[in-house]
Length: 371
Image (cartoon, rainbow, N blue to C red; front, side, top):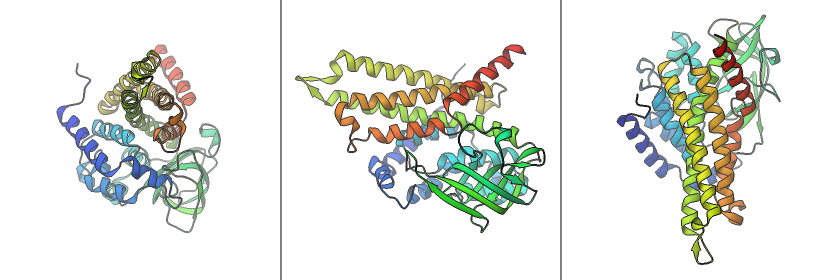
């Protein structure tokens, strides 16, 4: 059994890496970080849309490339490696996946071609404050036509044009598609650790919305979207972690102390080796998730939880150790280590933190063993 990517997928990865090396260097990321007026690079977002990346997993009948989940995993890894300041995950991993899973043919026809072209920035709004969302914690309400309530924090909610919102409807929950450019929606930008990925509080005051899927199946659909997104986020985390290791190795080869490369010292060697082991463990779990995602396997919930946990641990560990490998310079604003540390901390809590996914993993293993 071959668990590697195909030659075509590797070619896509190489092309994506060259594109991002040209369009999204560290200077580009810093420009967004230092710009208080925006949380993303609009020119890069437009270029990504022109490349067709946003339509990779969208069927051709809806204006996409009709490829699949594996190709999206490849792109996610390269976006993570570049720490790209664009709302790719919110749009491609969450918003698009929700539309594909639950949207009607008319909803897909109206929105997916615009998503593929980069004209729509999507958001997925489920949280309503501290703690992991649950069916009991959802207070935002939907009456079949109007949406009222507040969601916080919403990734890329400050720049999104549309959102899929989890709301209470009757005695259950439903997913609601909302155009955010309407009078009934208020946005409040939030300050986060990583300003290159904006967050907002969205308040809905009888905003017009359309239900996605059937009334009452919102929580089941949310869990399905989160499982698929977890695999894609894992690849983004592995890409960032690998960039941290590459950065640390390069510095260790070029930095001299006591007339020797610091990479020749045992303490640094062990540090780099530990980073490598953590990343490979995360990568293997991410590949397991990619297989389950692309085949529609019943193991996806289990694989997604394993990938999410391993990749979160790997990225945080690699980002932290990259700073340590750079010594005193690693803590300074001039060195780029903090770009990855910020993103590692942010991605670790997106779609639920490691503790949430560890609980899911235990619960899913119990169900599997009981079957």
